[in-house]
Image 1 (cartoon, rainbow, N blue to C red):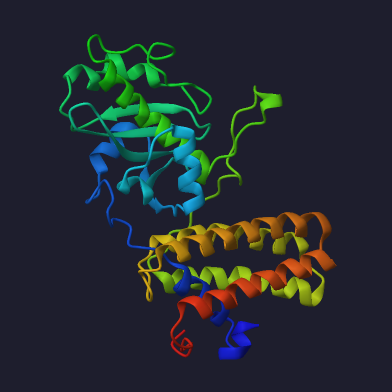
Image 2: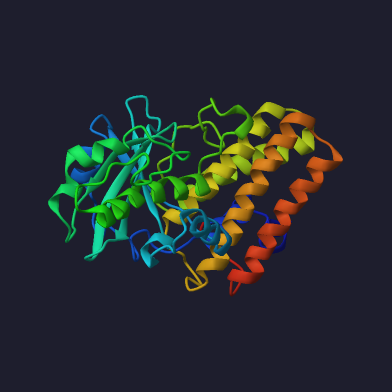
Length: 325
């Protein structure tokens, strides 16, 4: 195990994960360069607070999104920052993405809110050089309630502003782009054979931990990690180990909220490794829940250890000093 190589401390193995797999700063090249509190509150007025989350886009995801949209993503779209509204029960109630598109006369800047079922709750147009009618409530309210399976096609399920067909098509791309990107990153497609089911997140939404820095996140990950290790060692506490694996997968998504400590230029490598690590943990949690301790789950756990070692080799210049932790 990697923590045995560098230091016997339990903190070691998860510190490597956190410090070596983080992505770029949250507001780098983003649509919003300061906290958009008033805009967010206008979209989700019942939210008690908003949590900012970045989401890495790999080359494969970018290609998949562009294929479905039929157009290339703008540079700003490739580093999406989602704002998660938190309700009274301290659970997510949707998401907001600030997004822009190219209109006939220039860039159209806007935002889209989705609920937890993947339906549009609000579309807002901010800055633009088109007719003011494309930003009117009369035009924008027709997007409310639409989801990933809707066409967002002017002349079909969207009525264009009179004399502004091209601009109307551009605005319709705002919610469509938000939905396609959200499904590529967070939501699961409903089976075509069961079209009545609403799309659900890959994992049930859980209360989001609030952490101030990488060290605090590392401590949470260490606790979850050793729940799993203890289960393999003692053969007791299966439910706790499964829950811990799911927590690790969730914590992995939070890594990108913090500025990287080293090799920040290797953005694609960080994104790919973070995504692979998260998927491996989710698969491991499912197998552990179904089979408990088995050859398969031991093999999966060993693979997780290999990923950590790969992260160290690829993104660390020297062993991490764990004494301060």
